Amino acid sequence: MESQVDVISTTRLQSLLARERDAFAARNPRSGAAYAAADHLFGRVPMTWMNKTAGAHPLYLDRARGAHVWDLDGHEYVDLCLGDTGAMAGHSPAPTVAAVQRRYAELGGATAMLPTEDAAWVGAELARRFGLPYWSFSLTATDANRWAIRLVRAITGRPKILVNSYCYHGSVDESLIVVGSDGEAASREGNVGAPCDVTLTSRVAEYNDLERLERELAHGDVAAVLMEPALTNIGIVLPEPGYLEGVRELTRRHGTLLINDETHTFSAGPGGATAAWGLEPDVLTIGKALAGGIPCGAYGLSEQLAAEIARHTELDLVDMGGVGGTLAGNPISVAAMRATLEEVLTDEAFEGMTALATRFADGVRGIVEQHGLPWSIQQLGARAEYRFASPAPRNGGESAAAHQPELDDYLHVYLANRGILLTPFHAMALMSPATTAADVDRHHEVFAAAVGELVA
Image (cartoon, rainbow, N blue to C red; front, top):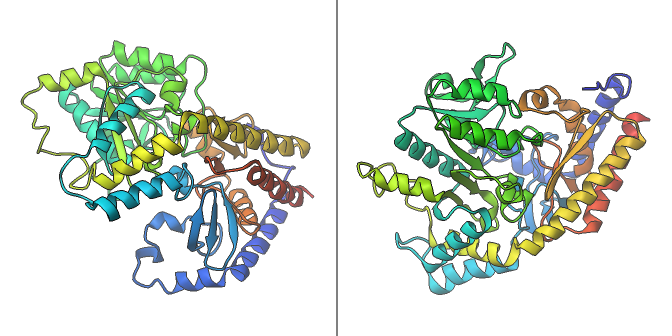
């Protein structure tokens, strides 16, 4: 991959980053004060990842609507982060708000340990979209992944799960494994409180590497491959021709099940990458976006797998190790899912969202080419991301190696200072049904100015 050397001056980048950070602090005094006063929050934030910010502190949310948010200091932002996919439907979409109000305020009952008819509707809609006939719910996709892992281990009698290096499956212990610099499996750097050596529970292969995948599966101890159809949380890494078909063929040949995690790749279309690319997983997990920002998760089972599980009468699927806890499948979550799927994240909405992501990608590509930068941009349906490497990385290891923290921080804080929010973890932009062409064009205006100052 081509280097940034002789294209961007390190000294200039550092100077511009310092200037933008000073401007960030000056324009956000109320957010800064709120952060300083949060003495009794661990890390001063409700979740520690909120400290992933290019400025000295997070921006504090005042209100949000559609594709825009406002902070405590009164600044309005085009929100291209959208809660790192959780708000892919837009902030507080009216049908979802109405459904939640009706369930909670009018009918009553946030949780009652009783099913509602909404849940059956959602299960049928997920079956239509993704092609797997049987569904159950959790509160997060992480929970859905954990339950899926328990199921596949139970029915295969195999102990290990195989994942891709630098994959994204929430905080699932089995997924925090990478291919190290020596080519061997290793715990992901910074892993917190691992219950055991991750190589005891997991195997790993780089994305787009069928040769290594086959070697790892040949051990005969892998219950399932848990994978995103495209990598998303280390930058978007798309499948090479024949790769996903090869994964399915190899898993079947070695008696290994396949779990598709569509938590982020749902952006590929109304049925995620599974429907868009004709995939045939045994299990599908998803969360975040389904309920318009209300906590939710779900997992779907193929006909064959559901029948196999039912034959294992020794398993207590009602009470032992149940998924998600008491609140899984609660009336508010499923009411929000029904409204969001039925009226917001519709098939038609995805057409418009994908068109806007194409507009975003085309505009960024034009600016990058104008300045002769060795960068690339990848699109996955309604989301797009620019990377500081060309050609685009083909696996997680390459993508991690291409990360440039100062350049990433510069663009994030420069855009934030001018009313544009990207996903904090990387330069990813997601479109919602409420996002407009004007929102995308505003990003391009600010992005072009940021790049222009950088290479001047």
